[in-house]
Structures are given as C-alpha cells and as structure tokens.
Length: 269
Image 1: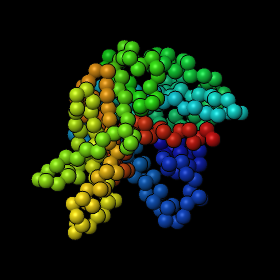
Image 2: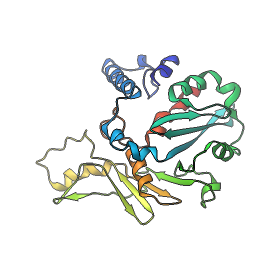
Image 3: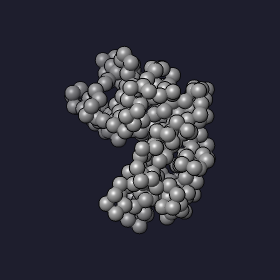
Image 4: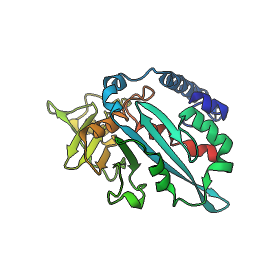
C-alpha cells in the first residue's frame, strides 16, 4: 500500500502531501508510514494471530459506493473490499481482486476512462456478481444500505454497523466499581455493541472525582451492529477489525478494510 501512495505522491494513509505539514507533523506522519509499512509486511497486533482461525471461517465483503461531482452532475465509482483469510483486497467493475496498493495505482491511472458510472442502479448487481462464498458476510455502514437489502432480501448475511456517537448508547463495563478501560463486545437482543478501549491520550489526573474521570469514556465511539442472521462469531470478527491495526494505539472507528480504503476518493479530486 505504501508503494501505491508513493506512486501518487503521497506518503500516508491520510493522503496529505508532506509539504503542507509542519516539521513536527512530518515526523509523526513518517513514523506512522513506517509502522504501516511493517503492518503490510506481516507485523501485526497479536490479536490477529490469536483469532486467525475465527477470521478464516468467513469472507467479509464491504461494498463502497463513491459519489463524485463532475460538471455539476453526479457520477459514481463502484468498489468492493474483501477480507478473506485476513488478507484485504479491492475489486472494481471488470477487474480482478487486487491489493490495496495496486488498487490505488489502478484508480489513479484508469478511473476516468473505465470506472466511472453515470448512475448507481447496477451497484447491487455488482455486489451480487462478486460475493462468491457460502460463508460470505456483506457489511454496510448505516444509511448506506441499498434499499433492496433493507428487508433481508439477499442470499447472503447482511450486517449493518453504525458508529454515530449521537445514535448509539454510552456503555460502561464496571469492574470493582470502576469502568473498565479495555475493549469489549456485548449483545442486546439481536443487536451487538462493540465498545473500544478508553483513549490512551486521556491523561485525567487520578485525584479528580469519579464523575470527572468517567467523562473521558463518553468519547468512545460505540459500534452498533445488526445482522440479518445474528451470529456471535461474526460480531466478534467485526469487533476485532477495530483493534488489529498496529498503527493505531487504541482502536479505529470503522472495520479495518473500510479504514484502509475510505480515502480513495481523495485521489479523484
């Protein structure tokens, strides 16, 4: 992936040119880039090894529809991101599966000629043609689910997640009368809640009141998950996808596959 960023003149997953940053910011960006390079070469958070068997049981697909503005008219780019056996790959219409690195290079070189669509009416067809496993889970962010799948009208298990801090509850896991700082997953009926760890950047003094100390936990982005067929193992996998990247000290809001490709649109500006 780093090679792909370099090909288009960028050095980090955030797609900011280095010259726009201060010296301190440049050093931080370079450190993050080196850490991410190590991750791409196989150095991972220990969780991905601990749960390797669990990840291998399912294929996760993340449809991604980019809406672009060209001359005042809406245009669309179809993408499908797959996590299979812990390997993350990207597919565009009429291409094979490719690494995130290659997908960046391909997008930069070819999108104007071959990838842009005038409408999004064939997006569900694109999804269904490329989801090819009996153990497939197709994951959408809330508010981005195609209408066709809202009433469980799909041949695969559809999972919908929501990371809105305004729609999701504030959840604490009390241990010995105090909120746990660690990450955890809970189930309530047919919904799951993935709660990240307390932010490592929080430096609240231990001398303050319990009320003030607990305010830091309200900044956690609780991840609400609902599936057409509830499954504890699948929920655990999606929960872990927020915690397996070594380049982020606490957690990431989106599952790792979406986190890695959500800035592709920056290449289209």
